[in-house]
Image (cartoon, rainbow, N blue to C red; front, side, top):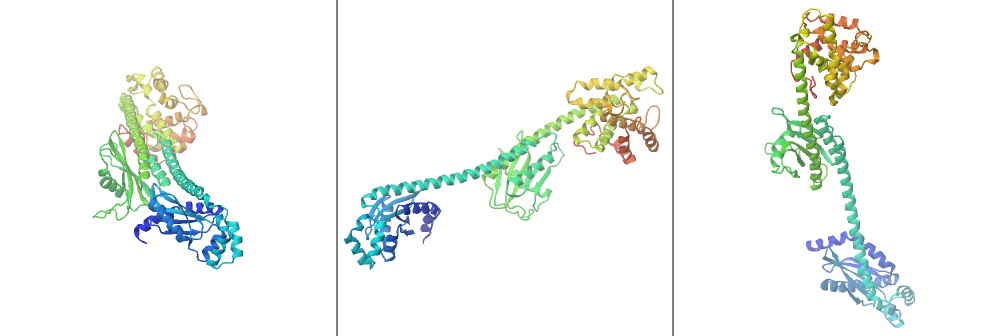
Length: 551
């Protein structure tokens, strides 16, 4: 068989299911079927539709040759045609098309009633040396149709073939649609899950790790990675990887910077590479076979690259590229919002630190006190099991606990020696005044309670309200202990910093009265000497303690 004949036969093989169903339907009507390619070669020998036809064929009657002649007429003239076989059967043939291309012909045959005439039957049996009685009985069952019905069968054959082809096309389209729907559902589910996880309070690295993990679940790939470029000058790129690949984070960044980023067009479109070639230097050592990469873009600036690496079977296609690009767009929105949120946080914390620094500056001996109290408060909150977000709110309460001193005379704050009763009453107002100052800021509502209660005591001897035990917020108790710990370990106008041993003894002595016993245990369980040194050193940074700072 030549290559042209092979190419012609393949479409017929693909239609085997259609032809098998057609054959079964015709057999019920008493018709046999044969299939021919566009070269007039038989690719499906004549299948007899009845016992009579099988007997005649077995005796040597060359019905297939007669069908072949009709098939060639159909192919040459590209139209339906009919004929009679040498044995007397009626033959009908129709052209077989696929997407308007002629790929073959089908021929159906049936024995006609005229063959039952005694003279015709006797001549057939004598020529083929068949038992007349047996053949006569078979012919009586088989010869159900007349020669005049040939035109009807021609139309039936054409309609059946058209119907089966339409059913095949519909099934193929349905299968394709189902596969596309399944793929689209996976993509939409992935995009929904990623969108649902886009919280500005979530860290960028955590979010990008989730993106890579989700991509691994949906795409049949070995690894997924994100390279996120630094938000501020001097800050390097962050690399997040999920899956297995023989490249470290540095290698993935080299891949992104040198092999992918330069390929992004001015419009920064995604790129697909199914035949990634190892460079002359061999820095990738065959670790990357193929990939799809999409840019993360914000304000027309490249802020990162999302890469799907090494498809486990086959090549990446346009569907993969579209999915990766959609996810990259989502990730870019998150990163842009996260950076904007970070900028706003930086601005807010800068303002708050400037405010507290201005208050501390009223008393040079308490410089840095607010920042140190904030750091100690956050550590106690973490030790008490607070979430990172809630611990940060306690940090703010510690940072702003003395903001009310803005209403206290500077001469009182700077006074050396004992305060008068009136001066002391004015100083005691600072917690209420601080709560009022910040009370109008909706975003700080949960911070105010820590400021208001930080001078309350479990034994009820505190101020401004003389609350006892559980009446005092835990945030207020934390800030109160942090305030006293820093006061005792820092130099003041009226004394030098106390020795650490004396501080520990004083805190332990007042546990349950001035300080909450549980918090005292948590504080004293720390390496206080090292902790105090870290706090005093860290507080020297004017912007210390912002979200994301792990110090």
